[in-house]
Amino acid sequence: MSSDFEALHEKLCAECGSGRTESVSRLIRQYGLDVNKTNSRGWAPIHFAARFGHVGTIHTLIQFAADQSKQNAEGKTPLELVLFNFFFLLNFIIYLFIVQSI
Image 1 (cartoon, rainbow, N blue to C red):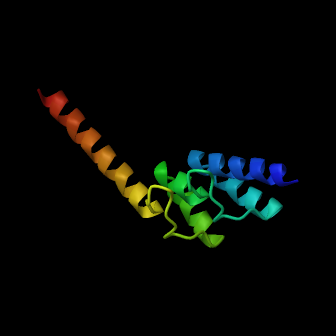
Image 2 (cartoon, rainbow, N blue to C red):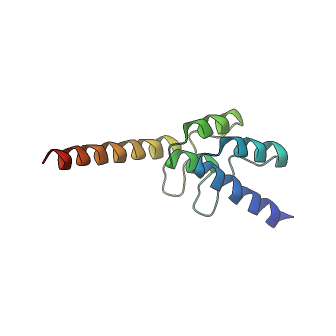
């Protein structure tokens, strides 16, 4: 039974990372999954959603009481992961703009 819930938690994390908000909501409701449970790297579902910028999924997880200040094994919170993505994207856009204008 425990391995079944481990597999469901892995599925939940994967769905969060893919931004499949409806599937995330269904998994939590149907199986009563713990939205604050972490994997071996200390990542909770909200970390996966934050890492890939899925704001709707983050909002859904928060509605299910996800801990917004939870740190992963590297000490990163979901907000820090979102900011990393923002700055990475901003740098990429600036790089493309500079390359395009040369």
